[in-house]
Image 1 (cartoon, helix red, strand yellow):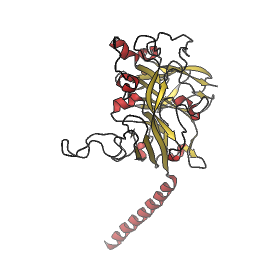
Image 2: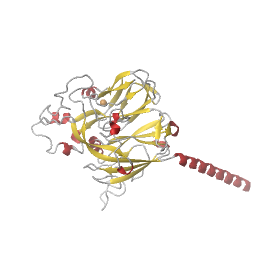
Image 3: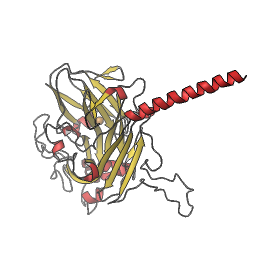
Image 4: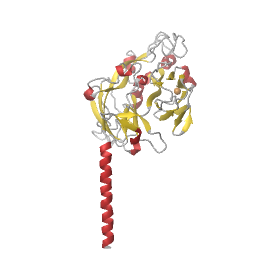
Length: 382
Ligand SMILES: [Cu+2]
């Protein structure tokens, strides 16, 4: 009995030492990844090329979605929107703004449009988002997939008291960040936040405002989180993640400006009088890829033979069932071959593209109503 107990104790001690050593190794590799992100208001142009349609060269004058003179009360193509933008440490300098150098033609994230910056981490890391709200609306950062406690959830609802009790407030720390406010969100990245057994070596999750969810995402507050398997990436001298493949992000959504938290900013006098309410409402549905219409979502450039990964996201309501279609190529989604991939609101897809067919190719949503409203662009394999 005694010998047996000693052997059990010995095995337990050995296991403890192994776990300790593995834990140390894990800690040595794991990193805290700090992101400095502001929510900002922007004058967003859904179609900078207007009136020129970059897909077919046509003149879009009279188009109810983009022409402010299409009918009395039409807004046209420019709206006040909110967007997540990335800064250097301490909010010193904009490095990822809508009109900052990093999103100019030729920049790696030129194509990201209104979509927020990519928050990247490796399984085992911890993500720290230093968030500042510089918009005029309440907002938050609610992540999908990663591990958080109640201060990292970014969503106000009654989750820590009884409804109706005195002092019972749905908004805990970070659930609602008011205009001018700040919050630090800390998110763990355990295995369950990373790629599953059948996933590629990386996986994309959305993050978005949740204050409330519909109004703040229609305002524009959405971005991607990418989690990599530890062996899938390298690191530069500063410890930043370096991928062995080119990455593109596309958010398919119909921004409903009628339901945006910034509706009042866009229509200070409310719904214009003497307009057809149906036409008005329809004209404020902006069928964008990264918030851009009719070929204006530019920057999808790659080399033939290059490894390319696409992260596709959707957001919105029941009309936001999108079928992303790439002409000229095929892709793998979790081992299945596709050239069209389907997504629903808040779902995502990670695809590996076979860049075997050089050319300038159409990339669009295959839903007829969305195609007709401009949800299309091109990508180029050189
Ligand atoms: Cu669509």
